Amino acid sequence: MPSLVRLLVSAALLVVLAALAYVLHLNRQPGLSLSLLLGAAFGIVLQRSRFCFFCNFRDWFDSGDPRGLFGILVALAVGIVGYAIVFGAWLPDPSSGRLPPDAFIGPVSLVLPVAGLAFGAGMAISGSCVSAHLYRLGEGSPTAPFALIGTVIGFILGFMSWNTLYLTQIVGAPMVWLPHWVGYAGTLVASLIMLALVALWLSRGGQQRSQPVDDTPWRKILIHRWPAWIGGAIVGVIGMVAYLRVAPLGVTAEIGSRARQIASVTGLSPGRLEGLDTLRGCVTVIRDGLVSNNGAFIAALVVASFAAAFVSGQFKPERPTAGQASRGVIGGILLGWGAMTGLGCTIGTLLSGIMAGALSGWVFAVAVFTGIATTLLVGRRIGALG
Image 1 (cartoon, one colour):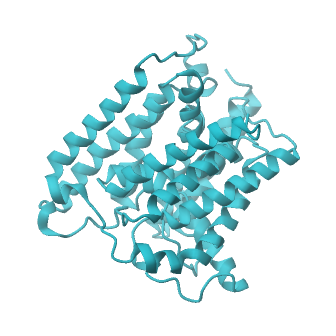
Image 2 (tube, one colour):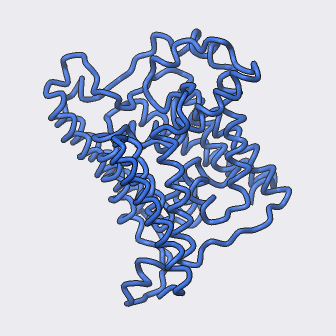
Image 3 (cartoon, helix red, strand yellow):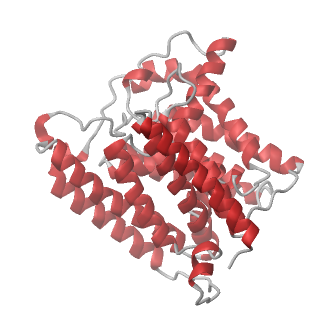
């Protein structure tokens, strides 16, 4: 069992989140209420299962351990099935030319793989993607605050380059929704076969690290990391519920929106961002309210990840070094630019996009992991990355 103090503090934080969600529900703000609950669940799962795209890829890339990537594949598989069920109820005929409401189906242009490469490079340099930096903020990471600051800067740079990219590449680019071409069954079968093939390829020669054996249920739940496949399955369910009741999973819409406000006030972005507000994804808008659904989601994510880390004894704040700060900012800039021009990150464009049957999700995924691998290889060769 964890210490009583840690257990009480963590439980109190989660009770406060639940109470706030209940108050919002009573005040007829169901979107904010459910966003708080889903964000809290997401933060706990990310922290407990170490659901981090970069860390899981690096485990396989460096030591051949595929278990973390299996968790991502499980999340995608569960989400793909869940989305297909929802889509089938809402839009029985996918060949009609209509797209499912609000699903993250983005344009496939040359900008998309470039954004993915930049985002992957930012992950390798900063040590995490945006969602992992948010949950590691709850663990006391010395790099995460600088990476998130860099992400805001990257978004502003994305706004500055957006009109040129949109008018030369993105406008008129196809938004390919696979069910429109091969139906729900065809998309479901093809997607699951693709995930199975990736899993088989990752398993070749894989070496799995041993984990401590502990028969105490409380320690398995509260102290030790959860198996990656369990975390992935829960992430897939959260993704389906989020889409069904609020919006597709994503963690950059609020960050980008605040960055857009800063850019607008300071005159750093164009007065008009061509076509941006008509596209799907974690699109940034200038908000009038104090907090949006996505803002409530990521706030609850950070608080709940802190609660999960604190009760397990994994909240270990450190004073940042100059290297951690610089890598965080530089990597964060690439993360922000990639997320802005790619209309989302590994959670929005990749995870929610692939779950929705969007070709853009698969393209972004290939580019992201290519960017990670390339940056690790080059960075290690020149001695810039460990």
